[in-house]
Length: 152
Image (cartoon, rainbow, N blue to C red; front, side, top):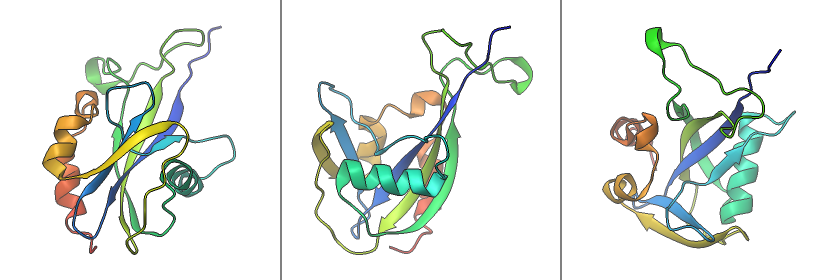
């Protein structure tokens, strides 16, 4: 019998004291991304978030970490709201990403990890234009409204 596989990933929308969002550009890519990655076996969501953020950005003093939306892989929606999870050995790894928001506890310098070539602090509008996550069914507008309720 074929196994259905999926991985749970985490991404973080980090806001600075000016309300700007941190985006990263991976080396060898022309698209921007949010910091984060896959959760490893035995790792909690919080451990994964904090570890990936520190590894990719050097930021460690985060506050108000709040879960937001789940992002399903493109094309996973079927009739009656069922999710089709890819089978083992198929090219799609079935990554389901859990989007979170947080604020910086204090201003800190961004120190990019080895997999990234550039970072920017951008407005929410710029983030919506530069990031390729709305295509997966997540509305950054809703996340932005919820995030603005977070004290910086």
